[in-house]
Length: 125
Image (cartoon, rainbow, N blue to C red):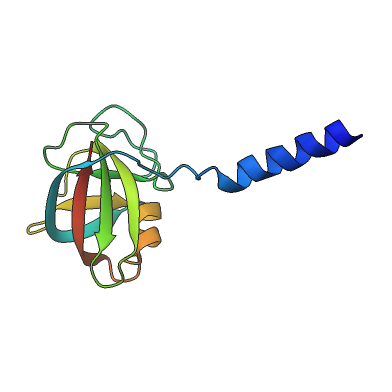
């Protein structure tokens, strides 16, 4: 019984001190700013530029030239809310926009209602 109790307490202490994994633990290779928009219902289920089926509920984004699979942290400059997304499509095609977020990603950073927002984008290593 003592051994079981000691094992349980040790495991609990280890769990309490083990840091939780973050969405990304690597460095940042590039930072830029601009206006983000989002796309969703009209594209949901259609093929993206990298061949995947677009799911507006995934944390993905469209960018004109970042390689497919690149992970970026997008931060809403007005609210400081951020989300990490994976580039899987090309766009945006609207003038003066730097990234098109999935509906889910836009909701996570608070631009779903406005449709657009000023963001900082960090390309993650």
